[in-house]
Image 1 (spheres, rainbow, N blue to C red):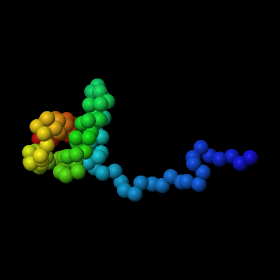
Image 2 (cartoon, one colour; image 1 turned 180 degrees about the vertical axis):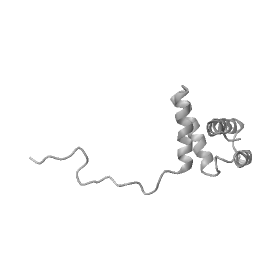
Image 3 (spheres, one colour; image 1 turned 90 degrees about the vertical axis):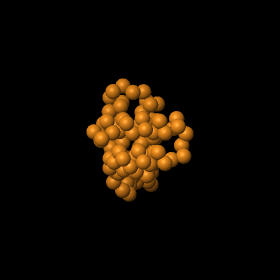
Image 4 (spheres, rainbow, N blue to C red; image 1 turned 90 degrees about the horizontal axis):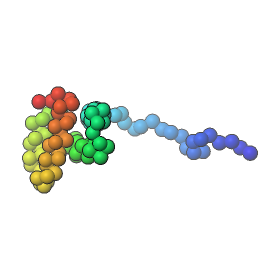
Length: 97
């Protein structure tokens, strides 16, 4: 009987097509710090989603453009507050003013 490795026979793992996005790296730092500070998993997940929403369109290292972007969006007031709160965590972790 032929032995097979634990990996799926016939398939090789390929390296990623691109490197880690610096924005993703910054977001991960924020989320890891929140985890270390004792935030719940659901809170960390929501903050991560909100930061991802922002990072698609603006540079998270530029607080002015983040504020301008959020202000122009047609989001509910509650959602805007959540996004601004998420960015607050990022700004504090990254020492962004």
